[in-house]
Each structure stands twice: as C-alpha cells, then as structure tokens.
Amino acid sequence: MTQEKEAFLDRWSRLKKEQPAQQASENAVVPEAKEEPLHPLQPVGELTHDSDFAPFMNPKVDPATRRDALKKLFTDARYNIPDPFEAYSEDYTQGEPIPEQMLKAINRVRDVAVKGPEKVAEEERLAEQAKQAEQIPQAEKAGLPTQESDDVPGKQDA
Image 1 (tube, rainbow, N blue to C red):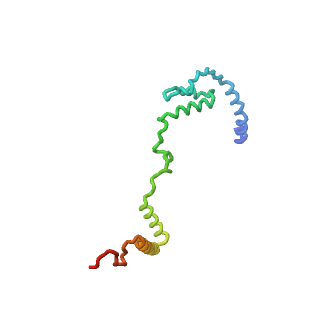
Image 2 (tube, rainbow, N blue to C red):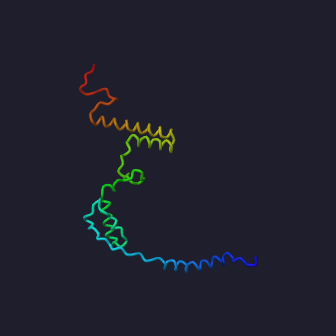
Image 3 (tube, rainbow, N blue to C red):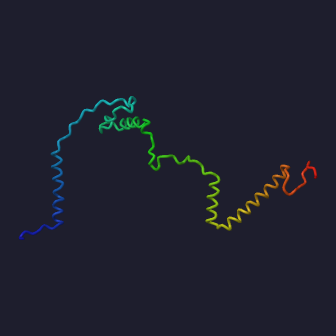
C-alpha cells in the first residue's frame, strides 16, 4: 500500500480531458460513406398510391419536392380514415341538440339544488298562474268562450 489512490475529482477531471482526444481519433478512423447516385425522381403529378415513394425520402432531395410527394401520397382515401380510438378525431361541434324536455329537467334539478325545493315549487306555481291568466285574455280576443262565462252568443238556453 505504498501507492496512493488518486482522488476521485482528480481522476474525473483527467478522464474528462482525455475523452475529447479519444473521440477525435475515433471519428478520423470512420471511412467516408460512398455517395450513391441520385435516382431520377418520378414527376410528382404522375405519382399514385402504388408508386415508390422511397426515392423522395433521400436527404439529398429538395424538401419542397419531398413535401409535395408526401401530400400526393396522403391524398389517398386509405389515409383519410379517422382513428376511432383517438379522443379528438371527430368533430363534436355539430352534434345533436339536447331535447327540450331534457333541458327543462336539467334546469329544474339545477334550480332545486341551488334554490331549494320549496322556492322552486313556489316559482312554478306562480308561473302556472301567470300562464293561465295570459290564456284567458287571448281566448276573449279570439271570441272563444271562456270557462267563467256561460253566456255564449248563439247558444240556446235549455
């Protein structure tokens, strides 16, 4: 045990300084990739869903041409099917309206929860009385008999 151990931070610092030199030597050893000649690309207007789109994915192809080829590919109806398990794939803005009876029931439950059942019952009773009072003048304007009067023109007394 005559040798002293190197301190942890000293060792870490030394290895950190040696690491870039090792990476540079490894990068120099890697042979250069042979450049493949670019295959002639089919005109984008002539592409169909059966065409080979692989040449358009080459990194040397102009991004605008690649984008046009992909647009052409995804116009196929097979790619236009929404995923039924995707939460936001459907249009929920044009749904069926809630039926009027259900809206009335929902509003009544809300009113009972907020105001209390006694207050809601009193309001409903007053609304019913107002509705009946409104119907009586309408019947009189139309010349129809009302429940209050037994005297109807053209009716014979018995």
